[in-house]
Length: 140
Image (cartoon, rainbow, N blue to C red; front, side, top):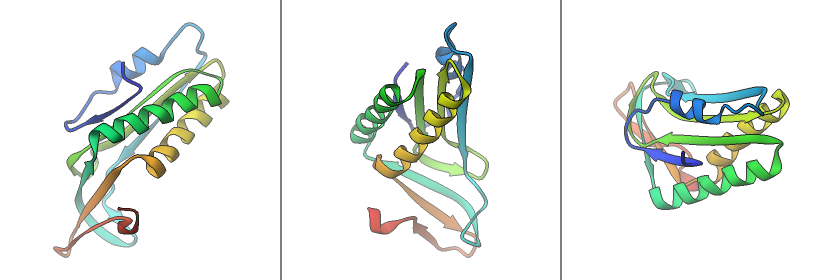
């Protein structure tokens, strides 16, 4: 199992979750980021994620490795989608296992926050009015 992966197709997170469960782990936490139907008061029809895959996977792996060192976790991993996604589709998944729930929750939240801040993945939304736009274009 890779610590961090970019997937251009829908993925099943059940095998990822299963790989994180260990006899030492009394807790498991996960985060599922889904495509929502609105942003800042505007109706959204769908979106597209683009990434510099090699750099994104390298930086995402660094983030998970940092989480393993920073938090008292057994293990963690994350996957982020690219390509066209419809409303309700899974865009990102993060999982963390630990002996205790606090570490699992803290690591999971920290990983998704760092992925959003550091990994070169860009979101392009399509709006109901027919226009579209990049989110956070100042960061691209």
